[in-house]
Image (tube, rainbow, N blue to C red; front, top):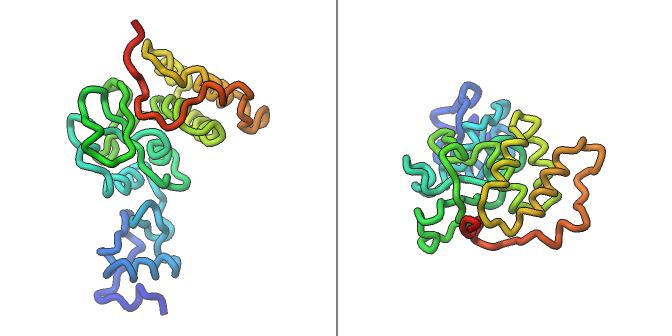
Length: 226
């Protein structure tokens, strides 16, 4: 007998178009069994959806919001969900293993947190709020993916964002803002590849991309070019 039939009072998941957490079903063990039985579909972390309920951008943002620091939901937007996590909110697919945040240079002290954070500069037009969570908009997400994600991972996500309506031209303009970006040449190659028909390249990394791709540094923009 499925565990959902043993709950007292019984829970009818069919009309629930919201996240289901362990506390909603009597604990983590019951939640795991319901996942195993197919009543719940894991979304992100300990958040799941009733089977048959579509995962929307709002629900994905809510799932990340459950584990995000308060600064990612504050009105002053000191922390913004970015990169792979932002792409996941916009497109869906497999949730990232780690949520990366961007903070504005000079407005947040990265040393105070153990989160995956990146210092950058952004304007109010680079971000939006989904279910209370600050997220880079699709074009800024494209720009960040091109700069900081592995080539073979970034290109299909960027193609997906473009197919969903994001403007590659706006993302390219963001990349060319007058700031010192060590990764800019590699990011241009990523965007050029993403703009091609899928069958033309199947996301093969250009030979000269690796030489100008910097991985794992904290600072995105190190200051404006004089």
